[in-house]
Image 1: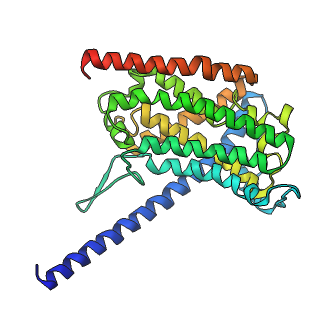
Image 2: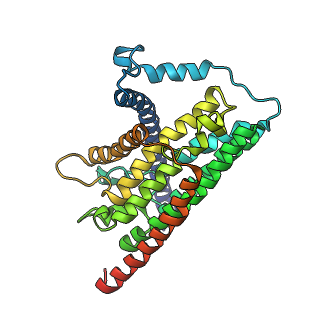
Image 3: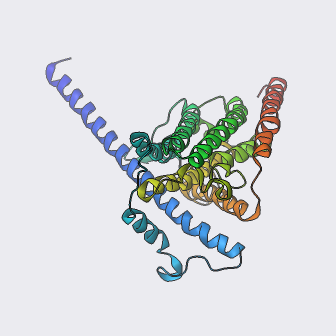
Length: 344
Protein backbone atom coordinates (compact mmCIF):
# COMPACT_ATOMS: atom_id res chain seq x y z
CA UNK A 1 0.00 0.00 0.00
CA UNK A 2 1.31 3.44 -0.90
CA UNK A 3 1.79 6.14 1.73
CA UNK A 4 -1.18 8.35 0.61
CA UNK A 5 -3.49 5.31 0.71
CA UNK A 6 -2.26 4.41 4.19
CA UNK A 7 -2.88 7.99 5.37
CA UNK A 8 -6.38 7.97 3.93
CA UNK A 9 -7.11 4.64 5.66
CA UNK A 10 -5.77 5.92 8.95
CA UNK A 11 -7.79 9.12 8.68
CA UNK A 12 -10.98 7.22 7.91
CA UNK A 13 -10.41 4.90 10.89
CA UNK A 14 -9.79 7.90 13.14
CA UNK A 15 -13.00 9.60 12.01
CA UNK A 16 -14.98 6.40 12.60
CA UNK A 17 -13.49 6.13 16.10
CA UNK A 18 -14.35 9.76 16.89
CA UNK A 19 -17.90 9.30 15.58
CA UNK A 20 -18.33 6.15 17.65
CA UNK A 21 -17.05 7.96 20.75
CA UNK A 22 -19.48 10.84 20.20
CA UNK A 23 -22.40 8.40 19.80
CA UNK A 24 -21.34 6.66 23.01
CA UNK A 25 -21.30 9.96 24.90
CA UNK A 26 -24.75 10.85 23.54
CA UNK A 27 -26.15 7.50 24.68
CA UNK A 28 -24.51 7.88 28.09
CA UNK A 29 -26.00 11.35 28.63
CA UNK A 30 -29.46 10.29 27.43
CA UNK A 31 -29.54 7.13 29.52
CA UNK A 32 -28.28 8.97 32.61
CA UNK A 33 -30.84 11.75 32.16
CA UNK A 34 -33.71 9.29 31.65
CA UNK A 35 -32.70 7.15 34.64
CA UNK A 36 -32.39 10.10 37.01
CA UNK A 37 -35.60 11.61 35.64
CA UNK A 38 -37.48 8.34 36.16
CA UNK A 39 -36.06 8.03 39.68
CA UNK A 40 -37.28 11.55 40.53
CA UNK A 41 -40.68 10.80 39.02
CA UNK A 42 -40.94 7.55 40.99
CA UNK A 43 -40.45 9.45 44.25
CA UNK A 44 -43.56 11.48 43.43
CA UNK A 45 -45.49 8.48 42.08
CA UNK A 46 -44.77 6.43 45.19
CA UNK A 47 -45.85 9.19 47.55
CA UNK A 48 -49.01 9.78 45.52
CA UNK A 49 -49.91 6.07 45.32
CA UNK A 50 -49.18 5.45 49.00
CA UNK A 51 -51.46 8.40 49.76
CA UNK A 52 -54.25 6.82 47.73
CA UNK A 53 -53.72 3.43 49.38
CA UNK A 54 -53.99 5.11 52.79
CA UNK A 55 -56.96 7.33 51.77
CA UNK A 56 -55.07 10.64 51.82
CA UNK A 57 -53.88 13.07 49.17
CA UNK A 58 -50.11 12.77 49.15
CA UNK A 59 -48.01 15.75 47.94
CA UNK A 60 -50.29 18.44 46.50
CA UNK A 61 -48.80 21.79 47.53
CA UNK A 62 -45.73 22.33 45.34
CA UNK A 63 -46.78 23.04 41.76
CA UNK A 64 -50.01 21.88 40.08
CA UNK A 65 -51.16 18.60 41.68
CA UNK A 66 -47.84 18.50 43.55
CA UNK A 67 -45.88 17.75 40.38
CA UNK A 68 -42.94 19.92 41.43
CA UNK A 69 -42.44 18.08 44.72
CA UNK A 70 -39.32 16.19 43.42
CA UNK A 71 -37.78 19.56 42.50
CA UNK A 72 -38.48 20.88 45.99
CA UNK A 73 -36.97 17.73 47.50
CA UNK A 74 -33.83 18.16 45.39
CA UNK A 75 -33.43 21.80 46.40
CA UNK A 76 -33.89 20.86 50.05
CA UNK A 77 -31.16 18.19 49.80
CA UNK A 78 -28.77 20.61 48.10
CA UNK A 79 -29.27 23.31 50.72
CA UNK A 80 -29.36 21.04 53.76
CA UNK A 81 -26.23 21.06 55.95
CA UNK A 82 -23.88 18.16 55.21
CA UNK A 83 -22.93 16.80 58.64
CA UNK A 84 -20.07 14.36 59.21
CA UNK A 85 -20.00 12.85 62.74
CA UNK A 86 -16.83 13.77 64.63
CA UNK A 87 -15.98 10.12 65.37
CA UNK A 88 -16.74 8.83 61.85
CA UNK A 89 -14.17 7.52 59.40
CA UNK A 90 -14.38 10.62 57.21
CA UNK A 91 -13.09 9.22 53.89
CA UNK A 92 -15.18 6.05 53.88
CA UNK A 93 -18.18 7.93 55.26
CA UNK A 94 -18.09 10.30 52.29
CA UNK A 95 -17.44 7.65 49.62
CA UNK A 96 -19.91 4.94 50.70
CA UNK A 97 -23.11 6.55 49.29
CA UNK A 98 -21.49 6.90 45.87
CA UNK A 99 -20.92 3.13 45.73
CA UNK A 100 -24.67 2.51 46.01
CA UNK A 101 -25.72 5.15 43.48
CA UNK A 102 -22.97 4.46 40.92
CA UNK A 103 -23.40 0.67 40.84
CA UNK A 104 -27.13 1.07 40.15
CA UNK A 105 -26.33 3.40 37.25
CA UNK A 106 -23.50 1.22 35.90
CA UNK A 107 -25.72 -1.86 35.67
CA UNK A 108 -27.78 -0.11 33.00
CA UNK A 109 -24.69 0.15 30.78
CA UNK A 110 -25.28 -3.40 29.48
CA UNK A 111 -29.10 -3.24 29.27
CA UNK A 112 -30.42 -3.08 25.67
CA UNK A 113 -33.43 -0.77 25.57
CA UNK A 114 -34.43 -1.00 21.89
CA UNK A 115 -33.48 -2.78 18.69
CA UNK A 116 -30.51 -1.42 16.75
CA UNK A 117 -31.03 1.66 14.59
CA UNK A 118 -29.61 2.05 11.10
CA UNK A 119 -28.71 5.63 10.09
CA UNK A 120 -27.16 6.18 6.65
CA UNK A 121 -26.02 2.60 6.50
CA UNK A 122 -24.42 2.72 9.95
CA UNK A 123 -25.79 0.41 12.64
CA UNK A 124 -26.21 2.07 16.04
CA UNK A 125 -26.66 -0.40 18.93
CA UNK A 126 -29.30 0.69 21.43
CA UNK A 127 -27.13 -0.36 24.34
CA UNK A 128 -24.16 1.45 25.84
CA UNK A 129 -21.94 -1.66 25.96
CA UNK A 130 -22.91 -5.04 24.51
CA UNK A 131 -20.62 -7.22 26.63
CA UNK A 132 -20.47 -10.93 25.89
CA UNK A 133 -20.45 -11.41 29.68
CA UNK A 134 -23.13 -8.81 30.35
CA UNK A 135 -25.02 -10.99 32.82
CA UNK A 136 -21.86 -11.50 34.89
CA UNK A 137 -21.28 -7.73 34.81
CA UNK A 138 -24.79 -7.20 36.23
CA UNK A 139 -24.16 -9.64 39.08
CA UNK A 140 -20.74 -8.09 39.79
CA UNK A 141 -22.13 -4.55 40.00
CA UNK A 142 -25.03 -5.59 42.21
CA UNK A 143 -22.51 -7.28 44.53
CA UNK A 144 -20.40 -4.12 44.82
CA UNK A 145 -23.40 -2.18 46.14
CA UNK A 146 -23.10 -4.26 49.31
CA UNK A 147 -19.95 -2.31 50.18
CA UNK A 148 -21.79 1.01 50.06
CA UNK A 149 -24.32 -0.19 52.64
CA UNK A 150 -21.92 -2.08 54.91
CA UNK A 151 -19.19 0.58 54.88
CA UNK A 152 -21.68 3.42 55.30
CA UNK A 153 -23.02 1.78 58.46
CA UNK A 154 -19.55 0.97 59.79
CA UNK A 155 -17.96 4.35 59.00
CA UNK A 156 -20.72 6.24 60.85
CA UNK A 157 -19.41 4.87 64.19
CA UNK A 158 -22.97 4.39 65.46
CA UNK A 159 -24.32 1.10 66.80
CA UNK A 160 -27.65 1.56 65.02
CA UNK A 161 -25.96 2.37 61.71
CA UNK A 162 -23.56 -0.54 62.15
CA UNK A 163 -26.39 -2.98 62.85
CA UNK A 164 -28.24 -1.74 59.75
CA UNK A 165 -25.10 -2.14 57.64
CA UNK A 166 -24.52 -5.69 58.93
CA UNK A 167 -28.13 -6.59 58.28
CA UNK A 168 -27.92 -5.14 54.79
CA UNK A 169 -24.73 -7.05 53.96
CA UNK A 170 -26.12 -10.35 55.26
CA UNK A 171 -29.38 -9.84 53.39
CA UNK A 172 -27.76 -8.89 50.09
CA UNK A 173 -25.28 -11.77 50.20
CA UNK A 174 -28.04 -14.26 51.03
CA UNK A 175 -30.38 -13.20 48.25
CA UNK A 176 -27.63 -12.46 45.73
CA UNK A 177 -26.84 -16.18 45.64
CA UNK A 178 -30.39 -17.21 44.83
CA UNK A 179 -30.77 -14.37 42.31
CA UNK A 180 -27.66 -15.45 40.43
CA UNK A 181 -28.75 -19.09 40.41
CA UNK A 182 -32.21 -18.11 39.12
CA UNK A 183 -30.54 -16.75 35.97
CA UNK A 184 -28.61 -19.95 35.21
CA UNK A 185 -31.64 -21.49 33.38
CA UNK A 186 -31.90 -18.30 31.30
CA UNK A 187 -28.28 -18.76 30.19
CA UNK A 188 -28.96 -22.45 29.48
CA UNK A 189 -31.96 -21.66 27.30
CA UNK A 190 -30.46 -18.66 25.47
CA UNK A 191 -26.90 -20.13 25.37
CA UNK A 192 -25.36 -16.70 25.97
CA UNK A 193 -24.33 -14.30 28.73
CA UNK A 194 -24.98 -11.26 26.52
CA UNK A 195 -28.17 -9.40 27.37
CA UNK A 196 -28.70 -8.56 23.70
CA UNK A 197 -28.52 -12.26 22.79
CA UNK A 198 -30.92 -13.10 25.62
CA UNK A 199 -33.49 -10.67 24.22
CA UNK A 200 -32.98 -12.01 20.70
CA UNK A 201 -33.52 -15.55 21.99
CA UNK A 202 -37.04 -14.48 23.03
CA UNK A 203 -38.12 -13.71 19.46
CA UNK A 204 -40.82 -16.42 19.54
CA UNK A 205 -41.92 -16.26 23.18
CA UNK A 206 -40.82 -14.51 26.39
CA UNK A 207 -38.88 -16.64 28.85
CA UNK A 208 -41.45 -16.04 31.59
CA UNK A 209 -43.59 -18.67 29.84
CA UNK A 210 -40.92 -21.38 30.13
CA UNK A 211 -39.20 -20.14 33.32
CA UNK A 212 -41.97 -18.90 35.66
CA UNK A 213 -40.13 -20.24 38.73
CA UNK A 214 -36.93 -18.39 37.79
CA UNK A 215 -39.01 -15.23 37.24
CA UNK A 216 -40.57 -15.42 40.71
CA UNK A 217 -37.23 -16.15 42.40
CA UNK A 218 -35.54 -13.26 40.58
CA UNK A 219 -38.40 -10.90 41.45
CA UNK A 220 -38.35 -11.76 45.16
CA UNK A 221 -34.54 -11.57 45.34
CA UNK A 222 -34.59 -8.23 43.53
CA UNK A 223 -37.00 -6.84 46.10
CA UNK A 224 -34.57 -7.95 48.81
CA UNK A 225 -31.64 -6.44 46.91
CA UNK A 226 -33.47 -3.11 46.70
CA UNK A 227 -34.37 -3.18 50.43
CA UNK A 228 -38.05 -2.79 49.61
CA UNK A 229 -40.85 -3.95 51.89
CA UNK A 230 -41.23 -6.62 53.13
CA UNK A 231 -37.41 -6.84 52.93
CA UNK A 232 -36.43 -3.45 54.37
CA UNK A 233 -34.84 -4.82 57.57
CA UNK A 234 -31.64 -2.74 57.06
CA UNK A 235 -33.80 0.41 57.32
CA UNK A 236 -36.28 -0.71 60.00
CA UNK A 237 -37.18 2.66 61.56
CA UNK A 238 -38.83 1.14 64.65
CA UNK A 239 -35.59 -0.69 65.51
CA UNK A 240 -32.68 1.12 63.88
CA UNK A 241 -33.83 4.72 63.45
CA UNK A 242 -33.35 4.41 59.65
CA UNK A 243 -30.40 2.01 59.85
CA UNK A 244 -27.21 2.29 57.85
CA UNK A 245 -27.84 5.84 56.57
CA UNK A 246 -29.01 7.27 59.91
CA UNK A 247 -26.01 9.62 60.27
CA UNK A 248 -26.20 10.93 56.68
CA UNK A 249 -27.71 14.23 55.62
CA UNK A 250 -27.79 16.52 52.61
CA UNK A 251 -26.64 15.20 49.24
CA UNK A 252 -24.95 12.11 50.70
CA UNK A 253 -28.28 10.94 52.05
CA UNK A 254 -29.76 11.85 48.65
CA UNK A 255 -27.29 9.48 46.95
CA UNK A 256 -28.62 6.58 49.02
CA UNK A 257 -32.14 7.75 48.26
CA UNK A 258 -31.53 8.12 44.52
CA UNK A 259 -29.72 4.77 44.41
CA UNK A 260 -32.81 3.02 45.78
CA UNK A 261 -35.13 4.50 43.18
CA UNK A 262 -32.70 4.02 40.30
CA UNK A 263 -32.42 0.43 41.49
CA UNK A 264 -36.18 0.04 41.07
CA UNK A 265 -35.88 1.09 37.42
CA UNK A 266 -32.87 -1.19 36.90
CA UNK A 267 -34.76 -4.15 38.40
CA UNK A 268 -37.64 -3.49 36.01
CA UNK A 269 -35.18 -3.31 33.11
CA UNK A 270 -33.53 -6.61 34.03
CA UNK A 271 -36.85 -8.38 34.46
CA UNK A 272 -37.94 -7.03 31.07
CA UNK A 273 -34.71 -8.24 29.43
CA UNK A 274 -34.47 -11.66 31.10
CA UNK A 275 -38.13 -12.71 31.17
CA UNK A 276 -40.46 -10.34 29.28
CA UNK A 277 -38.82 -10.20 25.86
CA UNK A 278 -37.07 -6.86 26.28
CA UNK A 279 -38.21 -4.33 23.71
CA UNK A 280 -40.22 -6.87 21.69
CA UNK A 281 -43.95 -6.36 21.17
CA UNK A 282 -46.54 -5.68 18.44
CA UNK A 283 -47.74 -2.35 17.04
CA UNK A 284 -45.90 0.04 19.39
CA UNK A 285 -42.30 1.22 18.91
CA UNK A 286 -39.70 -0.99 20.68
CA UNK A 287 -38.64 1.70 23.15
CA UNK A 288 -42.28 2.16 24.21
CA UNK A 289 -42.67 -1.56 24.85
CA UNK A 290 -39.48 -1.56 26.87
CA UNK A 291 -40.58 1.37 29.05
CA UNK A 292 -44.03 -0.17 29.63
CA UNK A 293 -42.48 -3.43 30.79
CA UNK A 294 -39.96 -1.62 32.96
CA UNK A 295 -42.59 0.46 34.78
CA UNK A 296 -44.66 -2.57 35.76
CA UNK A 297 -42.09 -3.48 38.40
CA UNK A 298 -41.88 -0.14 40.30
CA UNK A 299 -45.67 -0.06 40.53
CA UNK A 300 -45.62 -3.62 41.90
CA UNK A 301 -42.95 -2.67 44.46
CA UNK A 302 -44.98 0.36 45.57
CA UNK A 303 -48.10 -1.79 45.84
CA UNK A 304 -46.15 -4.30 47.94
CA UNK A 305 -44.93 -1.55 50.25
CA UNK A 306 -48.51 -0.43 50.87
CA UNK A 307 -49.84 -3.94 51.38
CA UNK A 308 -47.29 -6.19 53.10
CA UNK A 309 -45.87 -6.18 56.63
CA UNK A 310 -42.14 -6.37 57.29
CA UNK A 311 -40.55 -9.80 57.77
CA UNK A 312 -38.89 -10.76 61.01
CA UNK A 313 -35.18 -11.33 60.49
CA UNK A 314 -35.43 -15.09 61.03
CA UNK A 315 -38.23 -15.23 58.44
CA UNK A 316 -36.08 -13.25 56.01
CA UNK A 317 -33.18 -15.69 56.30
CA UNK A 318 -35.45 -18.74 56.24
CA UNK A 319 -36.97 -17.63 52.94
CA UNK A 320 -33.58 -16.94 51.38
CA UNK A 321 -31.63 -20.00 52.47
CA UNK A 322 -34.28 -22.70 52.98
CA UNK A 323 -36.80 -21.85 50.26
CA UNK A 324 -35.36 -19.78 47.40
CA UNK A 325 -31.90 -21.37 47.28
CA UNK A 326 -33.10 -25.02 47.07
CA UNK A 327 -35.86 -23.98 44.65
CA UNK A 328 -33.38 -22.25 42.33
CA UNK A 329 -31.08 -25.29 42.37
CA UNK A 330 -34.03 -27.59 41.62
CA UNK A 331 -35.05 -25.33 38.74
CA UNK A 332 -31.55 -25.62 37.24
CA UNK A 333 -31.73 -29.43 37.41
CA UNK A 334 -35.21 -29.54 35.85
CA UNK A 335 -34.21 -27.12 33.08
CA UNK A 336 -31.11 -29.18 32.29
CA UNK A 337 -33.20 -32.37 32.15
CA UNK A 338 -35.74 -30.78 29.81
CA UNK A 339 -32.99 -29.48 27.50
CA UNK A 340 -31.33 -32.91 27.50
CA UNK A 341 -34.59 -34.69 26.63
CA UNK A 342 -35.91 -32.23 24.05
CA UNK A 343 -32.52 -31.20 22.62
CA UNK A 344 -33.33 -27.48 22.92
